[in-house]
Amino acid sequence: MQKSLLHENMDWSLDFEFMGDDRAIYNYESSAETVELLLKKIANALDYCYEELRETEQAFALVERYSESEEDLVDGFCDLAVVAFNGIYKTFRYFGCNHDEAKEKSIESFRRVIEANNSKRQEDGSVLYNSKGKVVKPDTFAPPRFGDLIV
Image (cartoon, rainbow, N blue to C red):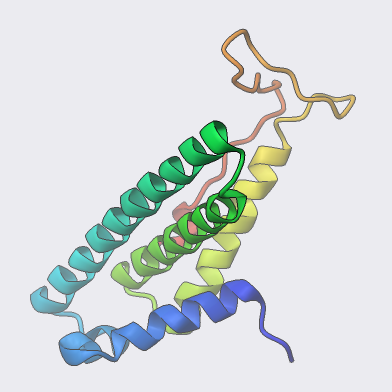
């Protein structure tokens, strides 16, 4: 069975849990030290998101000025998505999920957000925007819920 890119991405993240003292995270030994280490990993994921966002903004500025660096722009958005998705995975690990549970819950979370975003369409399938360019949510919009995934 071929793994999805999201599965491969989280397996890559798991590889980093084998480094140094992170063995406790992989086995999720519930201790203050493990919780502290997981919180640090979530904070690192946020730092990586900021870093990738800055790089993407720089690439965008170059595209605007010089009509080049399109590859850097695509790379930046892809890196940002990968780092953000790993942040979701690490958050589920923080909440006590093992690797496989965190993978499946991360994918389910992503699916729910996409489903919620798709529910922003009007009955006729169109998307309405307000004067600031923000999507106007119809009455049928349902935000994603994640409480059942956090145990």
